[in-house]
Image (cartoon, rainbow, N blue to C red):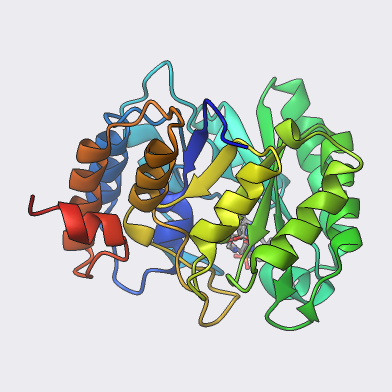
Length: 298
Ligand code: HMG
Ligand code: MG
């Protein structure tokens, strides 16, 4: 099952930089996003309006969002944990937000300081307000196959949260393997359970690459009809509340694989490799993208 078109959602500026120990200057973030906007991407997650006490790396959220050059054919979503974050995002003209829930109870508490059920109630409040401002709302579910605290997660727990987020009004729900523990089998079983109750077109896949399974897991999702893939250029990233979890699958690697399959992404791999190189240099870290490492000097 090879999709003709695949949409890639670049999450590097948010998921990638939220866990970065080095302080990344606001201007570097802005230049990073502006360069990403030149690669053919149609969606770039810019930042998060979370508590700076929890994630100081994203404290310059409003400056970054206001500072970037926005193209009319690109969506620039931001991550929102509560109504307070939504209000700040609205004040700087955000048009699309992403809300996040967890399939695991313990991760919900560590990441958002509330139970999974309270998390859904917070999201209801956010979406009720977002609707009155005509915002597009994307949803995330974390820990879709495994949790750093609760261990294995049953597919049914994920299906329940996905259904709740779609009912609340998310146009799409991204399935997060937060700690990258998924394998072909667990990812397959999880998605199979969800597509019994909703169509694959409402879903996206969001794989971290901690165990080196991410590309294969993305392929498994494509086989089951999912055509939206989250990734971060240079494989940046990780979640501060999932210790040891590494970055997302690298966008360069996803694009190379998709173009190899014959899928159309609209993305210029060469330009993307340049952007990966730019951000790796800026944070003084070697790229985690194999494709970038192989092709940059060519
Ligand atoms: P809390 O401490 O329970 O909240 O945190 P609070 O309401 O008691 O507020 C604490 C302080 O933060 C207060 O300040 C608030 O004003 C402030 P004080 O009165 O002490 O001076 N505050 C805020 N400031 C700015 N913007 C806000 C905001 N909210 C509160 N929006 C809260 C609860 C949810 C806020 C906190 O837990 C939080 O921000 N969590 C976010 C953690 C996070 O960003 N995690 C990473 C993103 S999720 C992820 O990476 C997974 C994903 O990639 C998918 C996957 O891979 O699975 C999406
Ligand atoms: Mg993530």
